[in-house]
Image: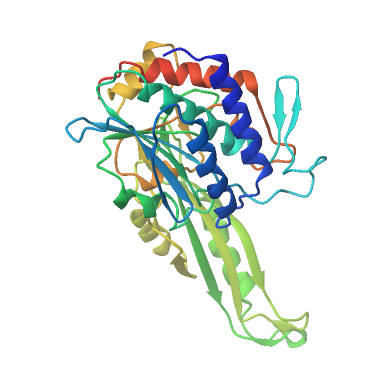
Length: 357
């Protein structure tokens, strides 16, 4: 598969549209509408396109249920722009090789590149079927994103998840569990040292969370990371607070399930602990999987990713790889380079052309 100048121009055109159409998580309907029109107009063949809520997917035109199926997924939603933008986040700015705009790096570059690769795969002879998915609600791990689409897709054997990894293959990914914790005290008058201060009760648990090390460490993902990220207590200055609420962000490795981590945490702190979800576990792909072997054969270096993606919601082997740099995601003046997109399409083609699943 050869990347043409037309592929590059079309990818850049799509990226500009993705940036210029606001698509904050759970509010992607306008962009989904426009993306449907773009795909209908740009596809070099009669496209078999489907939509559920704000998720859009396309099946390869010669889809054969007897063949294995590869999913190409990237998400169309973005986070909200931070205040520090020096330009309009929804106005794409092209300055030489650089395209600036909200979602340019995370995850518009991957969407634009994977759509072009889907077109090229569908025009070549491969031993597998291909499904292209532009998914919604990834940034919030929403129920109306990829999770809602999976039951509607044909059986999927493996997937490429497009995320900004500088086109290096992430073969493992940390999971996420968010905990709402409450320390209990007794209200009283602060001047008379009455009551039981819930903040002091919470401090003991927070200190354990800060210092505890889980015994099992991952060669790719390292240690479990727990961070207290929010805290709230008290009604006024002269009342001893009777409750203290705090939030814990837990990033898991493949050595523990989120349920196992929850049990360990509950057994070591006195505050009540309520998980928002247990479904975002750590994920990984075997190093002898054909996708990984292809990546290694062209000199790519596998790594473990600390950030979450749609990998966490798929029970099949998935490889996370895409153009751009993860450190630019969710920042002011987010950008991607056209040269990174060209390199991305070239590497995707090398991995996928002739792949045997």
